[in-house]
Image (cartoon, rainbow, N blue to C red; front, side):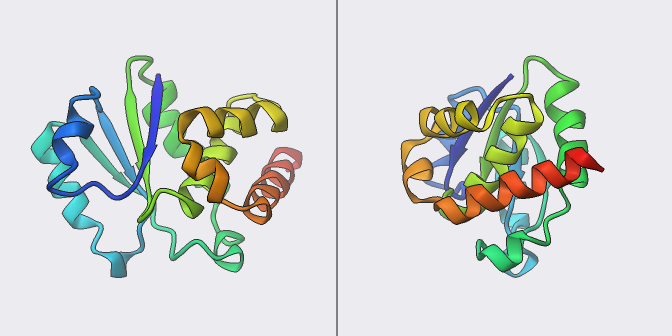
Amino acid sequence: MQVILGPRPGKKSKDAIAAQGVTDIITLLSAREQPDSVGKIARGMGANWHHFPIDGGHVDTLANVDLAKLFLLHDEIIRARADAVVYLHCSAGIHRTGFVIYALLRYRGLTPEAATEEVARLRPVTSDQVGEDRLALSEEMFNTWQAS
């Protein structure tokens, strides 16, 4: 399984995304951000499309993300198929994407330090700009989920 982080796919980037062997696209856009256009791009690439809506990257908004549903999506896509190549994105591939990938990496068993390092390896700009507040929230929410 491989995860690729990036910004919203578009007409100009779809060929480069497809060339990476992407099998699945997970879209973190809200309904008002016209996520269905990404679904159309995914289908045109022959990739599966999954919409996990998050209404922006503010910490208050991210605090409402249902990690149990996110982890279920992970299990359905990533754990179920070892050969999956997943493109995970929001609008810019920074705030929501960083928050979500950190939570998924913790769910996969990485330590907080290893998860932070992996985010940086996957996409340095996401790591640099996601914000410590979002990573701390993701960690807090993961720990709460794990304890339940």
